[in-house]
Length: 256
Length: 377
Image 1 (cartoon, rainbow over the protein chains, first blue to last red):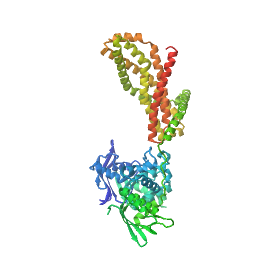
Image 2 (cartoon, helix red, strand yellow):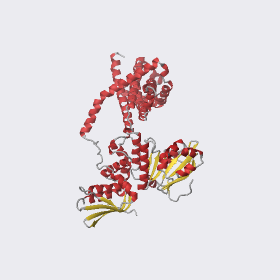
Image 3 (tube, rainbow over the protein chains, first blue to last red):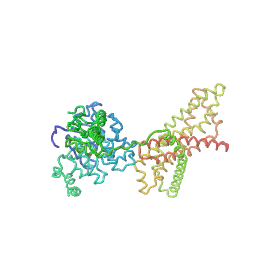
């Protein structure tokens, strides 16, 4: 684990999470720097999604503290918490679009709640967001049940970005996308990071994303962060799982 | 740095510079939109207008789009308005919004009188389709029952027992409680009004006939439609939404045989049992009130009850139960399978499952009443 980082946007300290008697996260520490894209990897079932959900407050923790934007989420008042929530966007693994709202309404929903904008501006920005995630304006009046899996991911990202957040959590954003779409997506995340100064916390299994999009990679194992650093450091690691993950057959295919 | 945004006009020779400054972000969007609308009127007033964004301290998608909107409105004929002083880290964002098509699609749905009339027309025309759907489902369930009869290994006993527990065993407390209370109320009202003629004891006749023939089974059927019919619709509907029913089909299973037949059988078995228990609870409640409120001794109550009712009353009531159960089950399953992808649709179909179920139960009760009257039972 890297040492203290002064401008950490997320600061996780000694987090412990357990379901019944099973301990998922065990005294985990993690810092996410402002403006970086952090790739978060680990074996399936290691608790990557659990950590994400703990940070955003959907899973209760047994011990430890979480600071986001310098606000301790346990001690924050409701208003402070709302303020933090307004500044982050979350892309859920299954999209989690509101099934009874159209694509347009899904994307405009958070904007409508927090800002008082004219319908014209709402519509135009919605079209811009759709364009950013690579969708045509024609899909705006479709319902989520009428979209393909990849389109759902894109609309969900557009909704996560609706308020131009400073921090986005992406839970397996490129799973279910074709390689070209996934590549575009990585590039899009990069662009947004550059233009909006976005910080990205990305749970992913996509080696391409790790290589092309991520500044830093953190690896979860046995309820702790077993390594964090650049892709080169990961490849040089002697840890058996890391070695297999980054130097295995699929990894070589990516590098070639 | 991130002060209120401004848009100043500075004349430069025969041209005009629109200098944007401050933070052009979503927070200030209403004010920004007004400023941009004002500036748009300058279109064509000078031969050369450009937008200077070098003083912008903060820019997000909303601000970038408003600058782009301004640029488009100022673009006059062949002369394109330029954006100057764009810093490197914002240029890709501005490029991104530049690709946005000019006219956003307009929402087409609106509420009008013709639209509402159309809705009513469609619902009326849909009644026929609903009936056909119910009959189709009845046929499919009977066919599945036939297949299972020929090949008993396909019968899902565990599933049937599980559903029987859900719709029968777990429903007993609430059904018994409600029918007990209804029995009490009927007896109390009967005694209160019959007492004026000194005919207290006839309350036993009324209670016996009413509970055994009508109220017992009808009330229980309505409760079952609300309790189990809605559960069936919600279960099948969410399975449909998550493609579980499609998965069953691709594995070579018939969803009717696997999901619907056990539920239907459980319901058809459960309703007579519940109707019987309900009738007993109502009679007990009536007897209790007759004793405590009307002073009718239990022995006298039972003696009178034996004279007042015959086995026919009981048979008339209980024969209706499985038919009503079948109606509730069929409606619930048809509605469950009709659920589309959204949570809203699930809610609509669950509602209409209960509404149609109760309606058809009452219609069936009427049909039975006519039938039994004409055969003299």
